[in-house]
Image (cartoon, rainbow, N blue to C red):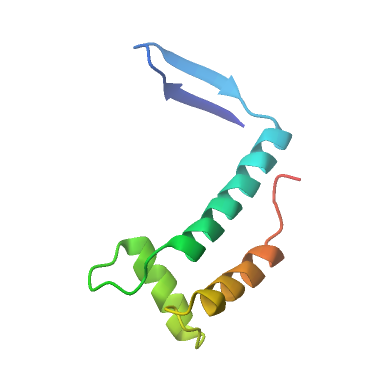
Length: 87
C-alpha cells in the first residue's frame, strides 16, 4: 500500500507499507479499540459519535454498557472473531 502524507517539512513524502506492517497496524487498532471499550466512559449525558455507537450496539444486543465486564466481554468476543485482512 502506498501512502502520501505531509511530514514535518513542507515536502510531501511517499512511502510503501508492507503487508506485515499493515497487519501490525490492524492488530494495534484492535487493541486500542478494546482499551477504549474497557476504560472509556459511556454513561455521560454528552457522548461522542464513537461513544454513541458503542452504546447503541450494547443496547441493540442487550449488553449493559455501564457494566464494564459485560461491555468488555461483548466487544472482546467480536474483536476475537475479526480476521486480520492483511495476513
